[in-house]
Image 1 (cartoon, helix red, strand yellow):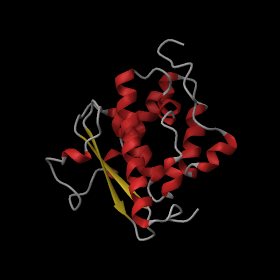
Image 2: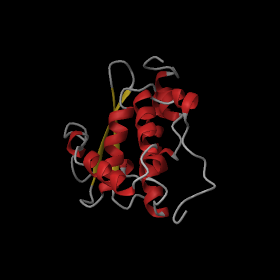
Image 3: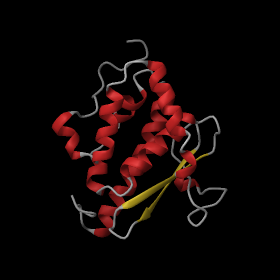
Image 4: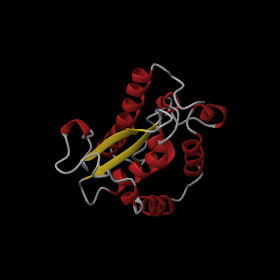
Length: 173
């Protein structure tokens, strides 16, 4: 396939998806069934339209955002924060400084809605190639690295939370 990555590992299906957060597993299943590129693009635009709901609140950060929250390699200048919830899981917030960063915004909404409140160990099981399931194989190398970088930062927060709480099952399984 043009622009595809035929030798890459694909996102989990069936029983393997049970190891990742249920909301994300359902979303990946839905995206894997979308064959029409224009339908996928429109769905991602619609998701990105919800970005204001996941924007980092002022109580956590204001511009200029700290460099340690910046996603390395993301062309859209995406930032990621995590806030601990009472059950010791995390809620994720984002900023995307490039107003044209629709893919970064859509990724942020998807990760906020499907991973916030999920057990950290399940978040660590999400394969980076889930980004290809969501966006399709047409992603450029640069864009895919940036979007995978957003996921990697979320996973790093989950890893830190496990280390901090000393409980790999924080939030319950």
